Length: 108
Image (cartoon, rainbow, N blue to C red; front, side, top):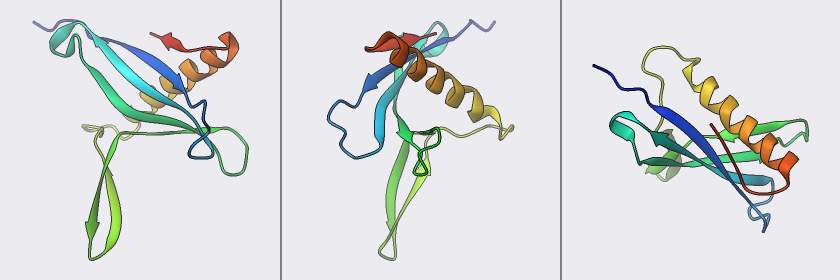
């Protein structure tokens, strides 16, 4: 029997503008199921370099190979490559809502 897992996105504005272009950090909070009471951190909302729109980066781990810095995403699709779009869209919706409210926000 599976229990329903709900997620809420919490936006934490980047008020110091460090690094430049980073608009906010985001956390995904879980309610219900095996993940109840946990959160996944490491998402960030960025202004696109061309100034048109926003981009979301996912939690990642950096490593070095032959002196070259690389990273791999910690949140990956199981089978559908478009699965990440749902969480990306939820983070962007939460950020837009936070902008409209003018303060810290959470979106379910």
